Length: 138
Image (cartoon, rainbow, N blue to C red; front, side, top):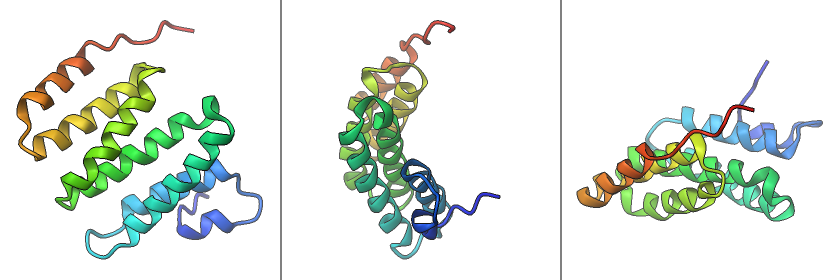
């Protein structure tokens, strides 16, 4: 049974990456008021940055997912200016890999840009997402 809560990070036997996934899931379930979700996301980002520094190829996608999720939550709270650098960093991190992670990051960035009334940049970002080629079948 998945618990997905802030205590997931301290549960014995839980891997760091799994604990970060728990923080992400918990943050997305939090109500719009209060800072509980933002605090969980900040912790998830900090912890995933540490993992990505230790093993970049293995945990870069997790960091990008944390950044994108934080941007999504901030955008829902009408804090698009704060979401922008997070969404931009997620795109930067997923560019090398391409595929679905890049498309998701580009769509999140486009949503943030649209919320900031930067419509032409949002349209260009969506056009870029449409042009991402899927990775070849393994």
